[in-house]
Length: 431
Image 1 (spheres, rainbow, N blue to C red):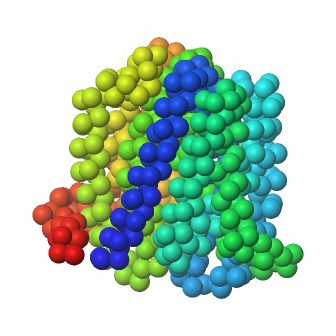
Image 2 (cartoon, rainbow, N blue to C red):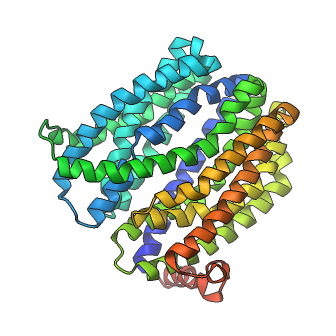
């Protein structure tokens, strides 16, 4: 478990950097723009965010899986990725533009809509190609793809909305810079530009898309669970309530970075693992540890959320405290899903997530229809927390059946669970 722990700590450090950058960006936008304008930003970004999960076609995951299993050569996979990217970028931009113009209140602000769409092709390219680094277990390079865009976005946010005071348009411009920089680095420094070709490998394309489409549908349903409340708030409420919800939900997403960085390692290792059952037991151990850390972190944040949120975002976001507190129970329970789903996805079984997330999405939508008119942002948070909890319980049972490990064994905390961490600390002390 030594190299597993090393990779985990490496990604963990990268995630901490991303959290700090993202939190700073969130604070700046809250302080400078206020709740209503943050609500408009959330409404502008929700459709590209949801649609990119479908536009990504699960290519990163299928790339990791196919490369990890040595099913095709790396150069063949890179060529296929560039071909898929050109097609999906065009389709994503056109379809997402139409969706925003037809269904979003922000659709009449054409310039802002265009700015919201520009990052899509760059982000898709970066996402597709990061699967190569995961498939080869090149975690350091994978980390760079993740933290460099956040750093560039932070610098541009300060420049454009604090110094130049370009308001919402300035922030939308800052979101373009990060993905574009990594796109250029991958294209030229890592020589992905050499793999553009009109010669089609239909066998490889079929393998990537058939598996990738399942990953994409699974990711789409997951993202709808996370983002649909913003769409419904925009329809059933106002920009102020949307902004209040967005900042409360934004903080819970930082908590999710813990299971997310663990799940990245889990997926890469699971895709290459020859001992499926043994690896699933390691994943269960990892889930138990992350559940403990998230529970402790959530309790501390719940106790001090009032002071913390007002201190960083300002008094105008005081109502985000209740949003944050209502979301916490669901966030903690969904840790189970966040970590363990990547084990099944790495084994080439992404469709299993849809079985848990589909009923959860239905519950989310139905509850939002009732709760938002009554309680606004707080109602959306409560609906999400209930749906997340349902998804976690369903997935735990499905995972248990699929990997043939009893639920009690999966969730029972053991003293030995912390042995790898203890050994790592002792090793550092001896050095």
